[in-house]
Image (tube, rainbow, N blue to C red):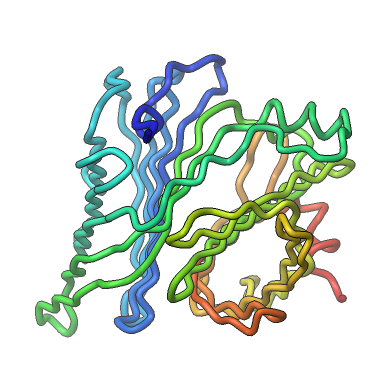
Amino acid sequence: MKNTAVEFLHQPESKNWFELYSINFCDKKNKIYGNAEIEILAKKNKVRFSWQACVDQTEYSEECETDFDGNFNAKKISSPVMKYTIVQPCENFKLELKNSKIKIDLNISGLFSIYDYPLAPDKDGNTERLAFESKMWKRIEQRCKFSGTAEYKSKEKKVVKKIDCFGQREKHWGEKSFDSLKSYSRYMIQLRDMSFSLTCINFGSTVLSSGYMSKKSGNMPIDETELEHIDINKEGLPVISEISYTDSFDEKDLIVSNRIHSFRYKPVTMGKNTFQHFKSFSEYSIVGALKKGIGFEEHFIHSSFMPVICGDK
């Protein structure tokens, strides 16, 4: 039985409680890539909306903040720049992104079963790791089909482009834990008949890593990931990255990304720390499996940790 309750908001359990809806889609054929986030900080009575899109090599973005209306069972969360609708929990959704230059309308359909990231999926009994994992936010993810349109002006003429692609939707909820964070990286990769999702969170002495492969037949856990390296160009943007993984059958492989488009961000402050923040849409090569895909990656890297991740190999 599907747990439809996870699609809606939870009662906050602490002052730092947050919930996050995050969606990304990548249409290589039509050259349209996008990422959208809605962060609800119920204890602070705030909802933050942000989105970025690249259409025909032109970048668009928007963000705003509104007051939280107190409705934890709302099927629609909206602002002047974004609207997200839960049409049928776990199955169908709508997303609207807009500003003065562009409007993107998307129908989102869940393709495969939802993956519920396990809480504290520890195998070695490491007490420090278990302590970190027990405090981490919870998370669900799902591979989806996206269809819709992007409407904008080009040389004063109205242009309407179709969108037809795969992507990922996810939801996080829980306590933010950034005090000792060194880096946080996540990858969502779409192949023709499956997807990969990989996460690596480095707290210095403790690394939390996991993920899964999603197919029509079901989801298979990935037990361990390791962020190997990120190449940063002279403009300060990631162009190539490498992450390795070990699946539940103890099979290892390496994934190499080559950037299609990166979004530029200012350093962000989380807790008492400052992080470099990168988001990219990339092409991916799964080296050992000889497979290729396309998708989205995001990195938060503590300023002091940049030479470790982005230095010379």
